[in-house]
Length: 495
Image 1 (cartoon, helix red, strand yellow):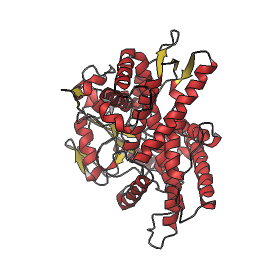
Image 2 (spheres, rainbow, N blue to C red):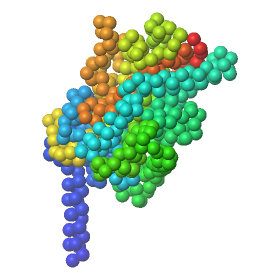
Image 3 (cartoon, rainbow, N blue to C red):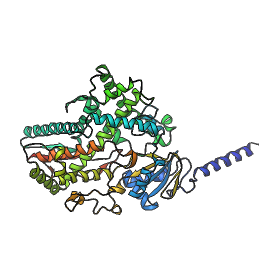
């Protein structure tokens, strides 16, 4: 009897293993699936050889086409490569869901909260409220320009002090200099308070954000694909690291919200947090408005609104070191249009075409290493002729839209601001999508572009940045949710 039972047990295991290797009907082509692991091993080897997720996606596209289907553990994932495929999945309502697995719920203490990784009516209500209130506190207005200009002035003075202390020139680590000032602009909108660049709390927040976005990747972690591993091997699976960073962030924002509550006055609203607290006390508030949701929104806005801008500035100045003739042309335009008697403002933007194109090229170089925030198929739907089952995760590589020759970029590896100038005017191609596409397009685009423009213009007006002879900067980057340049330093002299 036991022999028959054993044979039956083995047969059932064999059948389950076989079924686990089968792909859904008309699923996009991709590597072979194996029982339990899917194609995780092949993807791991490919990631190891290419060095980044964006290059891995490019290699998959070269072999299987613009839409590649994979499975890692329990997750079905579709990689979209090329502007056409990205445009299709980001503009179809069927693909406008957000993933809701353990990886995404853990970041907001087990529930779906925030505005980055939520969807449906909940997301619409919260996003609408956030955008409307941020506009009230400067988003896209002159007050926003004033905030950034103030931070630019502080940054200039800090660099001048270092130059004075070192006798005419100083060496600065450029990838690490912008974060505090970018954070402070958003902090002022959120709280109504301005922090000094030496403030310990704002620096602690910057460290937490950098840790999170450099140690976590857009395709998740081992525990997100194999949830049971967070119990069996929480360190090895990345769960303890991921949870630990988020706990630090939760504690930070919970403490700040408590401080705001202690000084809250409904008749004197200082920033976004005050307005949200007022909504929490309103009889008209919807169920989606909670203090936990406020904490999650704070996390999302600082993740999306600070680190991406900081990394873009890092790449921008990296390439200005690699292409000193571009830096010189930008400085000549600033001198011609503005001079040296006042700092640039956003009102100068239309007249500083070359500087604006430096910004566009910096955004392209950053975006080419990044991904659109993951989408989820809300129901069965077709992409590029393939059937994408409900709850499949979709990832779009911006490299394919911002860097590949097939997308229309000539010499994409060259930092060339003039590629955007046609017949004396700035022409931005349709496939220039560093902020994504569709309904989930980045809502911090206005602030990010303003930050990058003003900081680049202010610094180039006052300083010249030169590569150190013994430390040539490298265009290689550190992979992560927001890829960044490797640490690099520059010799800074006063103009």
